[in-house]
Image (cartoon, rainbow, N blue to C red; front, side, top):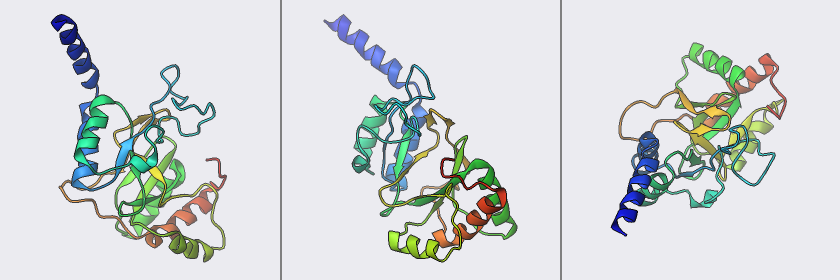
Amino acid sequence: MREILGRRRRLLSRRNAGRPEMLSAALTFATQWQWPVLPGVAPDPQGRARCGCPDPECTVPGAHPFDPGLLAATTDERMARWWWTNRPTAPIILATGGKAPCAVSLPAPAAAWALAALDLKEMRLGPVIASPTRWALLVKPYSLEQLGELLYAKDFVPGSLRFHGEGGYVALPPSETGQGGIRWERAPLPGSAAPWVPDVEAVVDAVVEALTRTGVSAPEL
């Protein structure tokens, strides 16, 4: 019996040593920055372009919550440690809104243009998350009413622009998803405090202009 238990411990140890940086990142987000996180569903091992969830047409493979659901997101150190000790390669999902940052995301080519435009204006930006297809600019929490008023003032809002507010989520670095790796395009400054993020109003104008100029307005992108 001791031999069997010892073998099992060795197997678990090897399995959980796969990506120690995931556990470290999850603990930083949850405990230092007080961002509520939870593990995402893994990509299908039979094909990374497919998702491990029951939806055969999932459009964000490996980059969304499933089990547990989004409401389980937490800043509790013990829970985060338990999740990523037992699921060391699980993507890290941020539950946006509430006291956590929200995000504005857009297709990668237009996002690169938008960031360049904001840099020319010497506008201060917070962290920017990049996947192979979309980038997400983190912003301060906003309400649906605030967002509605902001968008109502626009003559046109491209369909490819997405808002991740209360009840939404984004995958955080260094997650690996079915669409590829998640990385920081603009990394948070080193330190123990939560990163500074701008107001949503400060970035929407440049983002809408970027999408309009580049012609990226299809909602499926």
